[in-house]
Image (cartoon, rainbow, N blue to C red; front, top):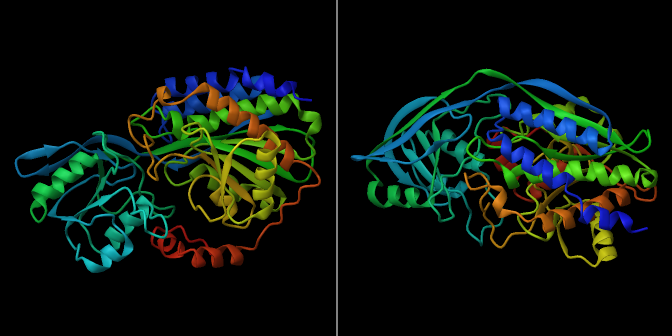
Length: 434
């Protein structure tokens, strides 16, 4: 039967929830806006036909933005503090470290200096280097302050958190700037003394995860997930309003196909992803990971029409995605390598099969994500609906008794991280759990 496809392609339920989320405004982890979004998602999942809808609340390290500045010469340059930066004012000679690769820190003395790094890596580099890895290389090498420069032109400063699970507030003040400000700083003030100032508050706060269920009451379960929170500087349309809205739409489409599900589907919309995967880590620790057949984590879809599935080397997940793509004659892309970021990772790192579902883009950079321009006008309802159709079918496929998804051992995951040259970066950021 294919009636559900037409129903999904004409549904406004998920898209309306996306609009509801972006209209909240600030959904920063632990904020009143995040709580409003969690409650709205609870209501939407209940209305979509899911059962046992609830919010699991937990305490987090809060962070509230104040004023920030980069003072260079007689100028004050536009910037925004990176979440979980400490409040401080520091002086130091400005040093341009380019892409901020590990070898850049080995080759340059950054002690007591203000380090400027790009948000990107060169096309020829063999792996991604996360913002937090660059930050903690700066910390380990004695830098006084950290300036994170957007690599995309357009005058928009870029954000993204620092801090670790054990020490959620970072060690040195950190700010994000636009590409233009980064270029201006390094051209005019390299080698000169500049000041980085961050003002912020760090209260205790409360976040939460929204839970719901569909399908039979089986021992095993599929997790379908996204994160509700967003950075406070934007409405978080792509990152990750799209993911949470997709989970809501899948709740509706899967409720209509519930008799086809042969494995329980648990829908979880996480809080506090943007400050270190706090919500998904909380859930990974409280649930029985041995019972999780697979995780379908949706993060930053709709910005491109073609879905990208990072499968983390689990052949069964790649096969399932390609089976669905072939069934619909619809293009997708798959990547077997490990992606140790987003809410699948607290499960995948222990060997649970999991997808990171995003969307292909023309460039390697984040685009509008993590800037004030991550707004609804960049997205198309047509793309949202097409992707919801594919993901509905994927969940039904994975829920089939004939689809087996073998777990791996933590030792295998650690060995793969070493082989893919990701271990060093995870160790310096405090994300190495083995």
